[in-house]
Length: 136
Image 1 (cartoon, one colour):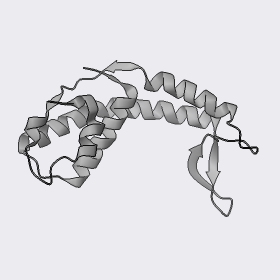
Image 2: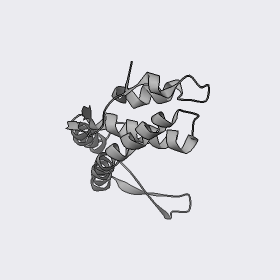
Image 3: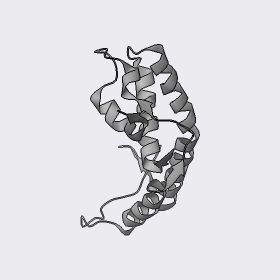
C-alpha cells in the first residue's frame, strides 16, 4: 500500500507504544500489529535518518544549563528578535518534501474488527495515529 512518509513515522511510533503497553487483544491482532511494525521499521528508520541529517546540517547541538553539549540537536525557530529564522524555513521545506512523499510499504490495512471489544484494547488515539493501517 502507499503511505506518506509522515504517516509511516506516526504509525510506526504508535505501533511501538502499543507493543510496549501490551493491550488485551486477540492473538491475531497481536500478530498483525507485529507484522506491520516489522514492515514499517526500515522505512521509519530511513525517514528519521533523513530528518536527523537535515537537523544536523541546519541546526546546532543543544547545551545544558552548565554549557555542556547534550548530544541533542535543534534548528532554532526564532532569532534574537523573535522572528522566524531562515534555517527553520529551510528545514520545513526540506523535511516537508520528504515527509509528504508517498512510498510503497509492504503492509496490508487491518480491519478494526480483528482488535475485539476489550476495554484494554486499542485506544482511540492509537487508532487515529495508525491512520490508513486501520479500516472499517
